[in-house]
Amino acid sequence: MTDLVKVTKAGAVAELRFNRPEALNALDLPLARAFAAAVADVTGDPAIRAIVLSGEGRAFVAGGDVSAMAADPARGHEVVDALLEVLNPAILALRENDAPVVAAVRGVAAGAGLSLVANADVVVADEGAKFVMAYDQVAGVPDCGGSWFLTHRLGRARVMDMMLTGAPLSATDAQAAGLVSRLCPADEVDEVARALAAQIAKGPTASFGRFRRLVDAAPRTTLADQLAAERDQFVAAAQSEDFREGVAAFIARRKPEFKGR
Image 1 (cartoon, one colour):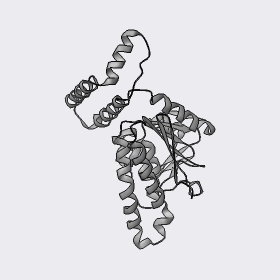
Image 2 (cartoon, one colour; image 1 turned 90 degrees about the horizontal axis):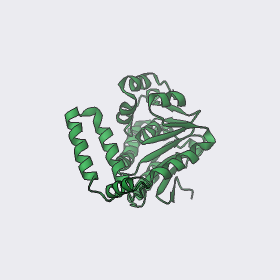
Image 3 (cartoon, one colour; image 1 turned 30 degrees about the horizontal axis):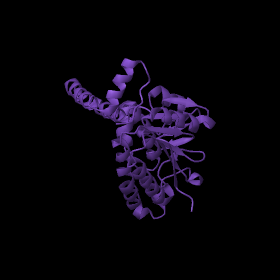
């Protein structure tokens, strides 16, 4: 049986690759369960210090599988509920784990697929990629954290426009808006994302987790609270093995060798 999510571990990098290309990697319950199991595997592995999310075939993830919801319209809500019962804990696990997430996007990222992209810390996309909400077409609402992640990344005005009109973002517009970090040709996306993850995996992983928590909190805190949070996080970081290594390397004028602790 084909793995619905291919998990590849290379050194300190794990790649989770959605593998339902015949359906543009649309999320049905089996794929959602495979993704959740893969997330549990890599977030529970202390050797993993960077995670790549990618999709097999022509798309990253084309949202939820609407055909599964339409199979019995009277019970479509049960399909949605079952999917999110599985997906939401996986999304939280990725966010709460210190290992940075790199999304490698080819083709379309729609609906929940767009939410997964917005959850990533760094997004590498092909120059022809397209990002679309799509919920207006089925009278649904954003899921998998899309309303939270995208509001943080793009701002309320842009997100509401996308939600209300269904207007897609091109790859260049997504980069200009701050959703996409790097653009490259489609046939280079996976290679660039993996190389970037390998570079990130050599860094101070615990500090990277602190970076994310501070950035996530910033839009909803006062300056005074953010200053206090930065102080607390820096004091904690300064007690780490990696901090001691970083300071020693700086004084010795050599490259640090971080352990992620």
